Image: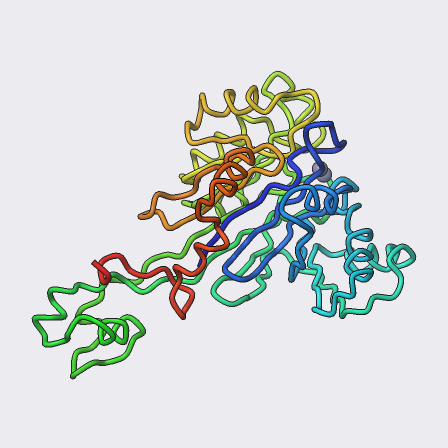
Length: 341
Ligand SMILES: [Zn+2]
Ligand SMILES: [Zn+2]
């Protein structure tokens, strides 16, 4: 499946001319999932990729910069006659918050489910799961979220399979799906199962052990970097992280790419990115509307695409990420390069 994150808002606390409030739209195969919905999120989406009918919204915590866009968005969906159900997940307290918001969004023509998650609880979806990671941020209930793809079958050894009498083609596919072909068992010709991809989104947090464990060898860690190291004392006081702390955690967790977000209005992204890169080189600071695609590591791994680059690519008729979804096979898996070569 195709996996990417679209950064609808990369600011923190208050919006600036350049950065909207926190919102990240994840594309996971055919699913669209929004993480946080700061004030102005629907406008940010409308100005860029469009206000898509996402399936779920995950709220990290209840500071206003992370959810104030939600009632307006629920209402907009109603006004355009959405009928697809929507589920909002979040920490304990979500039911009460949504009840209080009800006065704003009123009756909805679609089914709205509200699910309070316990720390470490997982939500299983087709091909992946989302786990609530308890983080450390003043408020009782604050989560980061880990998106963990199901394991993938191992590599098929085509030479060995042929030696055992299996012809290349559909029979290789059957072996990969776990079927026995002409008496040849999949485990005879397939390597060990491979890890799926993992993306971890920190939400707001000071450096946090649980998050570091959850992010171990993640393909992408999106970590807040509200301050530079100069303001480390203020970061500690407000239970946020500095860019350097985010980078240290990324390095210790051996992630493949770190993306900094929740950038305070007082900084340029480059300043935070440079501070982080001194500790962990594979760091990016996405701006609003940038995308990070997360292909399998053997296909190059996570990579930032600037909004301007994406627009230029799409104008020139380059393959859009939506189109490349056709590359996946019926199981939603990327074709195995070994078998197709
Ligand atoms: Zn915040
Ligand atoms: Zn916060």
